[in-house]
Length: 220
Image (tube, rainbow, N blue to C red; front, side, top):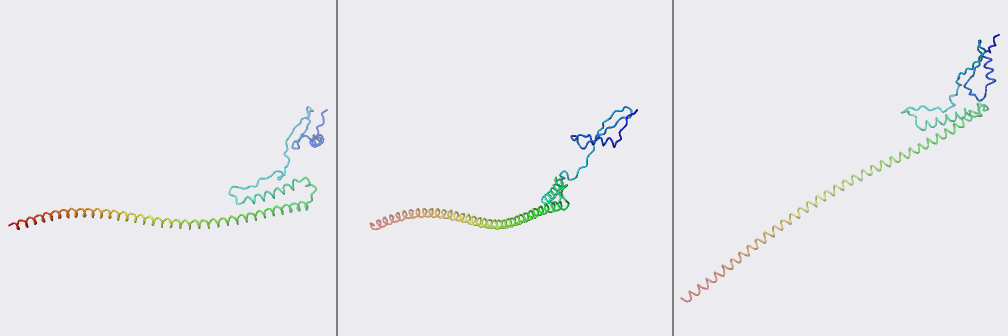
């Protein structure tokens, strides 16, 4: 007499009643009795249990060059975190839809307030940046004006230095001319002195000749 082969439904029921709680839920063990040998064969088939899409954090798609700013991504991440916490809350089964909606609404209000404060902070930051840019532009204009005045002062100083150089050259030329005049005057003076001495000698000779002539005429 062949042993009775339990049906698949009975096997599954038997497995569900005798399954150890330590075994993973993703593994279903089926026991079947071979028709000829009467032996039970144990087969394990892994079955993937359905998972919620929100059971793990989902990365927000943000390609390179996306117009989304970091603040927008932070707000989206906060909204996703609040929704995920509400879904994974241990009291989710006892919460009514209205309570969940109210909790999400309160959390969303807090996030909106945070986003609003972030926008206000960024607005103040932008205002400060604009003021600093205006101050920088004013400082640049002042620097350009001072640089222009400095260039003009340098040009004026260079003109004065050139004028002083010309005056120095003129003074040196006058000094050389005066030196030459002094030398020429000295030479002329020396020449006149020699001529005077020569004239004095000639005059003395003339006087001597005159005396001799007078002496001869008186004796005769």
